[in-house]
Image (cartoon, rainbow, N blue to C red; front, side):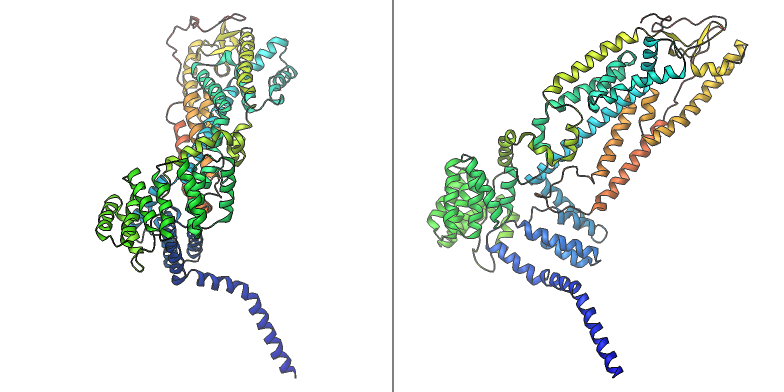
Length: 633
């Protein structure tokens, strides 16, 4: 009896294990059945029989399965699925990119060909052109604006001590820690005003305008002009830099022409047609999709409407002829194709479809003539369509699509309606819009703030007495100057001569100090440079080289964070590639630019040894920019 219980327990245990393993096994079995060669071939046959040139949904499904096969280490199965994905939708570039990566070492020649084909597809696809435009606009605006903002912040930090000196001159000449702390708090007060990053940087740039050199003033000017241009053009730029979504009419039309039967897309197109009955692309897309479903009545009605709105248009007449061809009304189909060929003699679709129609009417000489014309216009496409038609003669005709310029025209016509509503779809662009007050208020507020505080800064700067260092000729404010033997020294020079009596020995010591100072400054500024490349140059006064370093690093960091794509497009381009596939080369780019930027700091000596050839007993002549204490420039 005990043995029987053990046997039953073991049976129950194996049964439970089988139940636990069943959910794992069923999807795998379904995947294998779905991705078999016969199933793929049957789906391709259905696509070709319906006359569709592109089928995005099954292409994306095969592509996902190919990525799963790659993750499982089955390279041969992945290549087969990627080839199937490319066959379902010739305008889907991701399978070609992945094939180029997979075959890079196995078949370099084919890898190069696949990569070239992917680039060609991207260059001719409207949705990918919009995707590249949105990312390029966003990247340029964000990188340029943030780099200028960081550069102005660096300039402000470099001269901020002089603002505290001005405040101490205004409130009194006390030199205690309390006075210094109070002056620092007053100098940092604009940070608490809640004006936003751009307006706050504008306030400080105006207050410190009396200390700016020519290059620093140029960076501040670029910052102000760029801020005003971005704020003022936000509504114009937003429709093109916003998130890529099917809510945008031109992208919806492009997606509808690339898809099969889709009730949601047809409902959205019908709503757009009701909103704008004068746009021919909406009834054209609806009629084309209806013909694919076999609803020839609705297809004829919609395509006739499109032909009335945009008469004598080749791609509309071609698809209208396809409706008549599907009804086997060959005389009307021939009439529509001939009108399409007359409207656009360089279009291959009407000539190929005319050849099919003449063949149905047993006019073989005319069919051969039109076939030759079509082959001369697009040999590869005609060859592929002829191969498709071999098992069943004349089973399909070519479907025409509007040129990309037509979709761009629709996007321009609807850009004003979309306006700034596209901004929330782009988080980077939304962040950029929050840096400054909204337009049109900012167009007057930012210049007014700068002019008011620049006037205050110039007035305050005239109250700050300055002298020139007797050794290095550096202009030093009264609060920073040190006097010794009727000479004025800056902090660094005074630290070397304060315990000395002989001016000859002082001169020799200062020469050595200045040579060592380069090493000392390189050591400490290198720490800042490693933390934020470019900051060392900005604090040292090398404004343009520091700005270039910041520009490069912001570009590299932003590309790594966004994985090379700042604007998401899950509606139009639904499948996002594997994160580290692009992030690894981008991280390598970031590391390379980081190393180059840091190495740029060592390209030149950070300081020069001052000219000490003048007589020891003579006080050096003041430079034209130097002032006596309490004087003005």
